[in-house]
Image 1: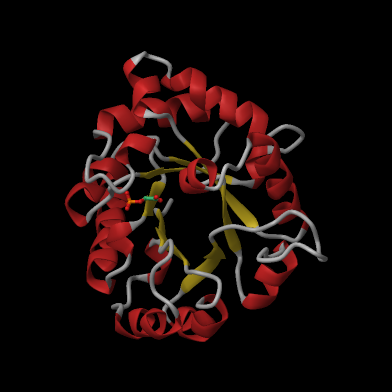
Image 2: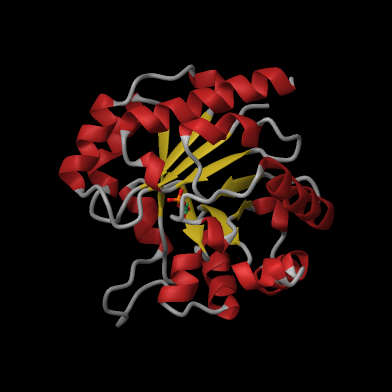
Length: 243
Ligand code: PGA
């Protein structure tokens, strides 16, 4: 087993900064970690070759489910594949909360991604109020049921991202994350589940040391080659210790 370390650049690192990142990031031991970066669309094809040299795969941050046509501003699964993506984020909380994506739309996007051979990383997570009211598992179960309707969960990766922990500097404790990861795996079977939400070099090891945490989805701390490399190496160490 090796950790799965993903970096979600969000609306950061255009082609110029993106290329510099891949030139600067240190080589990690390839057989010991699986690493993926999700750059903005214009950056993706520009960094494909550089990323390959560093054994880093690429993914899109979003897609539209239709194949082509009059959908101004949207990008299809086929276009992502053509641009060099192997993965795609679906249902990130920013897509859900800022852009109003519904579970129905997310379900269609997952189906389109799978049809074109992209591996989706489906993001789920609860709001602070839902956690405080003890409704975390209920919320996760609702999202999984709705998003995965008609889909074999073994075909994708899940990222558990508590919304109150994203970009706030307030990560879930390893125990809080572990509890939800164990629940997701019990509910869906043994599939990869990543933790996301304020992952940093300082907390990456203790999170990935948990038995049901298979890796991390990193936002802010994935923008700089040094901090992202440190997170990769924290994962390598945690998985060596987990055995
Ligand atoms: P963060 O973002 O690491 O900056 O909290 C995580 C995410 O949104 O995927």
